[in-house]
Length: 362
Ligand SMILES: Nc1nc2c(ncn2[C@@H]2O[C@H](COP(=O)(O)OP(=O)(O)OP(=O)(O)O)[C@@H](O)[C@H]2O)c(=O)[nH]1
Ligand SMILES: [K+]
Ligand SMILES: [Mg+2]
Image (cartoon, rainbow, N blue to C red; front, side, top):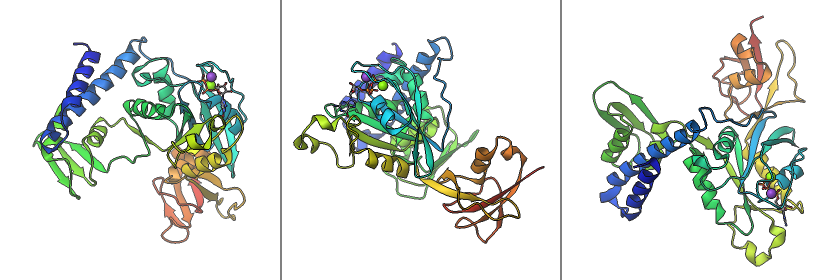
């Protein structure tokens, strides 16, 4: 059987298996098999291009990177031209954009890099079109803006499935699970919460990935799919905003068919763009960090724009490529500090409004 045939066979088996407690364990095995086969398919697609597929070279810049993701001709290029300084070609035909086109959107002191991408199609995750290359750019971004054409809302599901198959988890946190591999002793499962999947299913999933000895600590109720994600370990977790474009083409009645939380815009007519800018900014979770040179007052006028959850090390990386290597210690004032001027290391987590002094080797 070819990989594709195997995948189809498992899909058929999944479709005809009723979902209930008695089949859970069997479904878990099928899901794990499926995830493994799809990974192989992706590897094969990359290998068939003579090793390293030629990726897009995109230089990151600004305080965060946002990708515009959608089917061909939904209006990605029209949108980037309105949001940023970019001039990306717009056309009434599909695949007008064949490269990654960057632009910068300046908003509330933040410089946000926006990337216009070639359209995605069904099958992109397994290498169709330049799907894999586009997806690898998406995997590296901080926020996805999914754009749907007002007449094709059903594409939403297809796009989400493609991203899922490419290991991209949108609007999800990494499952709170740790797996420690051992050399013997079998599988030991501990959990701090009541679990809806049974231990047998967990062992089956691990077995599918040839893990027979491990400590598994589960701190939230997870699905079999989430467990597979943890075992695979190559998933990325990215926030996502959904935007319906070209609303100038429909009436109010048609608009009611979209979920409330989807932003409705007309890139062409520039309507709804303020709300979109706000949503992009808010979703990126920016915080302000004020730098204080040693023995001098802090610069309270021009904060460093960082992302929530960042560490002192992240700030070092932003300041200079050698700062992390030369780092000695830092002092911090503000919400993250136990006391004013606390001495901290590179792993210290920062909060909005913190004042920071970084001391490096001379
Ligand atoms: N009516 C209307 N047309 C729009 C809107 N935005 C884009 N279009 C049109 O839709 C077509 C496709 O726009 P593009 O911006 O090239 O779309 P794209 O998603 O970048 O397309 P590809 O690069 O080919 O994937 C063009 O004819 C645009 O003028 C909009 O808000 N309203
Ligand atoms: K187009
Ligand atoms: Mg385009």
